[in-house]
Length: 140
Image (cartoon, rainbow, N blue to C red; front, side, top):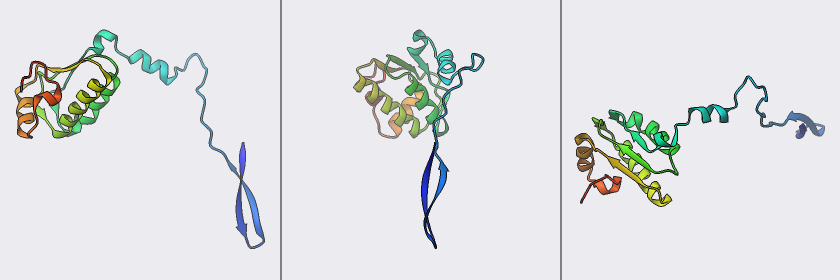
């Protein structure tokens, strides 16, 4: 479908046909999977959803990826294993605090377990407390 776009020239207004942008509908070919079916095939089972193991390096370059992993698990109980973390950036700390607040607001179970000494040292270094992260077994 085209819509008319008015242009004003020396002889008055004139119209020019401009194609209207439309959303493309997914193909219905049986050979091509839609993004929804591809995503569903990659979704972990509910048992896998219960635990997220943080990588060794949780610096600023990995904060966005960690956030995406957390967002994908929103709405279900989650245990974050921080046992193998050896480097931590402030951006990742922000992501973990936001996750703790989000899970608490959603009424879902959330805990960071097995915090490495690097994680605990970084939390203390920046002046935060473990209860902000919902560290399991943490007592202020």
